[in-house]
View (cartoon, rainbow, N blue to C red):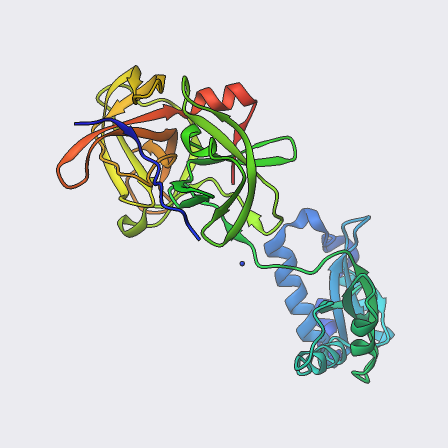
Length: 363
């Protein structure tokens, strides 16, 4: 059987009285602040909001002190709020009034300018805020024409849906298709790691839902790894690998090496999730035409063209919940196929992490 890199060569085209229920000696009521924890704060906010009824004007944590602040349109409720452990603040508009203003905007989406990034209730300022990209006149005009009191804020850019780059999914170059291996970071920059015979194609690289970025580094032959820098802000890089029809994604928790005889699995766009065992470490492989690669791991997990660069991981943990795995490497090449079986080699991921000073992504 002929050994070859597994890159495809096909060009491929995101109620006021009830407040008294909280009255108690101040010394007996602990202060409600960030240290109380989310569950305690949520219960207190709900209870106070219900008790204040129509006078409730929202609640929030003070960014400086961490104290829970509760708004009310009736100053007579301040003592009850304070007795409950929160800080009272008298506001002009109730939470219900602010919600009504927001609902009016929600019902005016026909003809909504693209420069309007969204709107929300700003509880601390007791206002409804409309976000407009760059202060665009059309966006400001839309906000003013609603006939309700709003504050317009200028934002730098419009929001976009986020999509994830996940191990084993498609990675498309101008001239070929491969698979995502792993995602990693260096300071503030994020990267996709894949096979070097894929990144040698260079240029702009796309994923399943759009453009990811451009090839940053590439090493082939000798080694078989490369990186794509994530430059698009709508791309997220979770530490996950797609198991396709075999189950939910697995999560990378480290990169401990599986030795000879150990169970491993791999993921790629062509043959999806396939498993097997490690047969040899540190193998030199000749792909022909002078393309010799050293330091590969041999396995009996099958793969086919298009699977190149895809994730090799340890066998997923058993039991319920999220399956955890150790990153092993990126599919390089092999012989045979998934009908008859074959041999597949992977480039250990630790080498590229050390070479480029990268760290695997974490949750």
